Image 1 (tube, rainbow over the protein chains, first blue to last red):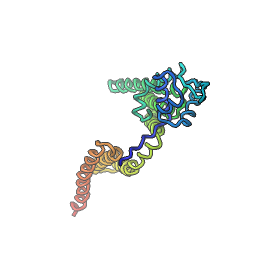
Image 2: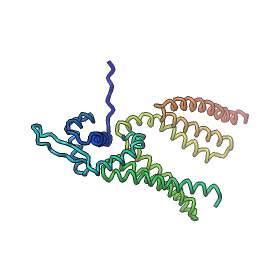
Image 3: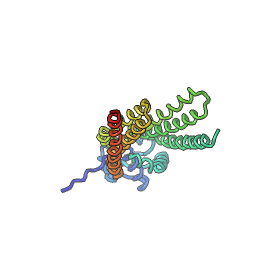
Image 4: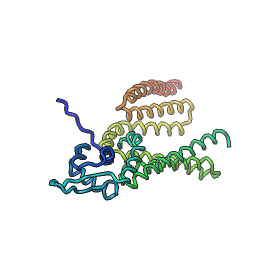
Length: 97
Length: 182
């Protein structure tokens, strides 16, 4: 049986996918986002905390039984995504997106 | 200033403006995201812009020494820029490039040495052969680097055929010089 090897993504690619998903859905639970970007929850969480420190996403703890995290884009994050989308084709050409 | 210089200056000035624009676009995103690959690309385009500026300066300065300095700086800056492009891609891709590079490096050396020999040697015919061989090795260098693409295979076949055809007259020329004396 042929086993297909998943292409390793750069951190920049993962960040772009996460920002695009948040832009599309408005806001997402961290677990939903980890499924969409196909990344383990722990690794995604460290990326999200970094993006939060930079003011690109907002992380809110939901007071439910799971105490899950709700993620949404900030206006600054949306502006960054617009700029990244403008550069997307050239980033793809260089294999960075 | 002749038409040739005007065209070169206009072209370099346009490239300087365009590369600076792309560098600033990457820098703007880098400042917010702090991804190293974006910084490398930004600096890479900045170096290309500086390379164009250096090219313009080499054409406009009056001092021959300064002009030569800017001329050599043009390619040094471009080389630094391409180095940063390589640095910006993933380790996985860099490893994939090692094998073709290892195969093709002797050809690049042969190309440079044959070209140097063509400058040093006296005979016109010999010089022409050396220049041809230098070009053939350059072609082989490029084809080995591009081997993963369809064009690389075609280029390698072309380079091999050209090498064989160019080397034969080169060998006959030398033998003819020796035998012809007797």
